[in-house]
Structures are given as structure tokens and as C-alpha cells.
Length: 203
Image (cartoon, rainbow, N blue to C red):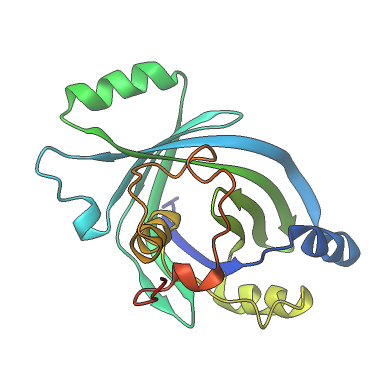
């Protein structure tokens, strides 16, 4: 059986996740993974061409360890489809060593807390990042739109970029000289929704 490596998802900016959690409970969504801390390391190659091509090589540690490859994607109405292949690995540090031997080096670190739900055939995650809160819904395009409606999130801003792409926009708009998307780097900082958009200006 051929595995489908296409990931289709939408990312919504939702500052108040508690309201959405209440709505998820109300429609009968099932929590499949409680809130967990994630540490993600994005890698680059020696030529530093991955990020420029929209390619992601990522090592993630939460309740388990996973290595992920993502290709650049296409976005329509804020819903993005892209190639994604992911595999569990047994040891974070050993995988770091292997990637280094293959010529990859850590490009940046980003952190978040994630709570995961399932509803019908979709996965819904509530993400708390250092610069704000988001919801990602992954599934079929029609199902994603239906869930957005069920959760009353039709007016929530859709973010077509990755969390790293949004980080690049925030750094530029707020003139931040930091390399990693960590809670320590954003401690005490209020990031407005407008800072996630390319071309935004802030004094």
C-alpha cells in the first residue's frame, strides 16, 4: 500500500485558546495528547539552500523524538498542502550526530507547547508559541473548512507561512536581533497580530 505523504492544513491565529478548548469539548472532539513541551531544531545544509527553497529538515523532541522532512507547499485560501515525511527515532543526541556527519548543521531552535485533539477525520492542535497562540487543523480541505465553521473561527486570521516564516516576519517588523524562537527570548514581550504580516511597519 502506497503511503500518502501530503500534508494539508490551516494555521489560525487565536490568542485565547481556552475558548476553543471549550468549543472542542462541546462538539465532542477527543484529546489524543495532553499539553506537552516541544523543542524543535531546524537544520541547514553546507550551502544554506534548504530554507531558501522552502525545505524543512527538523528534529523534534516532545514525548518522543521525530525527524521530519517537508518540501515547499502550495497555499489556497490559507490552507497549505505540502509533502511531508516523518519518522520516529530512538535517540535525539545520536540523530543530531548523524545529521552533523551528513553535513547538516542547526539553523535555529523553536519551542512551543502543544495540545492535540481529533475530530472526525481531522487532527486539531492548540499551539502556544513564544510570540502567540495558534490552532492548526490538518485533514481534507472540505473537512478543515467545516471544522473552522463548527469552532466559530471563520474570522480568525489564517497564516499561510510556517512558524519559522512567521518568526522571520516578527523579527523584521519588530527589529529583533535574535536567532531562536524561544520563550526566554520573548519573555515580557507583547507581539501584535500585525507583526506576523510581511510589509508591516512598527515604530
